[in-house]
Structure formats: C-alpha cells, structure tokens
Length: 115
Length: 113
Image (cartoon, each protein chain N blue to C red):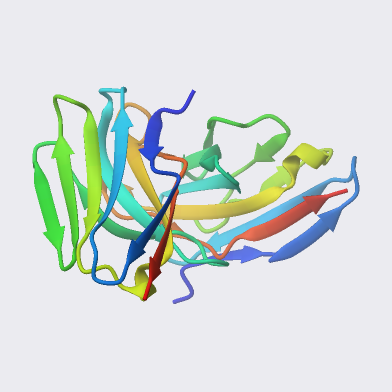
C-alpha cells in the first residue's frame, strides 16, 4: 500500500515547455486534488476531482489542466510553463463517501523550477 | 483574499513550553477544521481535526479550541518538544463544494532545547 505517489520529485523546465506531473493513489479514494505551495502562501488549490470524469477548478487554476479517467490517477498538465509556476506541487486524495470525510493523504511533492 | 487566516507566521518556543497557533475564517460553509503538520521535504499529514459542534478536542499533547461564534480556532501544543518543529497549517473544508480543503498560510514552529 503505497498511498499517494507523485512523479517526478524534481523537474526543471524552460519557459514555454509543457509537462505532466503524475499522481496515483491506491486507496480507492474518490476525491483527489492538486495544490501548489509557495513561501508565505500556504497550500493553494489548483484543481480537484470528486470522481472519474469529474473535475473542477480551485483557487489558482490558470495555466494548468487536469483530467481524471480512472479512480487511481489524476495528472496535472502545465501547458506552457512560466517562471511564476515555480513551486512545490502536492497531490492529495481522500474519500468522499456519503459526505463522511476522511483525512487528506498527501504525496511527497514535486519541486518544479521554471527558468 | 485568504479564506483562512493564520497567525503567527513563525513561532519559537522553548522545550516544555506551550505553542499556540491561531486561525480565523469567514465562510460559514466551512464545517470541518483539520490541522496538518509538515516536516521539511515531506507532504502535509493530518494532525488533529474538529467539527464546529464541539468546542474542544484533545489528542495527547495537541488540543484544538474552537469558537464558532467568533469563527476562530486554535491549536495548542503542550510540553512542546524539538520533534514538534515543523510547519503547521490550519484548514477548513467547504461543505458546499465537495469538501474542498482550504489551507491557511502556515506557521513555522521551532522548539529549542
């Protein structure tokens, strides 16, 4: 039982490049989300999903796309990387069953630098 | 505009002392208030959580106090230890939006011997 797995752990991109951050969970959680963490800003929600085929925007969605084709996977795509997207990205999952919450489980993070 | 405010930004406490972190919110759709602990290089992990129908919850050395009318809640760490040194985030779940979790900006706690 690996929990939430994010890849890669580190990435350097040039401005304008695109890439996909991978996130997979093996806990059969319905709810998955992506956050970015910047100094003094806490964790800001980018996109989230309440189940396969259902996604919605969070607080800071611009420049990012997501899709949820399976319960397990929730990739985050950067369409055209910008220096402002330099951050640490966290994926999280939790169960949303009958509106009974469980804790959010976080991955180890992806440290992204855009030059 | 931060939906969950948190203070202080950083905190230094001597070993054995009490660490107190305060949070406030405005959105009445928030109905679940977890605290997460994050060590350097790691993802956040749930520490303790409270629902607004309870005024206090205690788990070991960690206590959440909740004031629904003031829309404020706080984390108290009793007998603080160097191993408690971490960043602490208060958070709130939005029941009107699939339980989205909104985080405060975080408090960096250092417990010195």
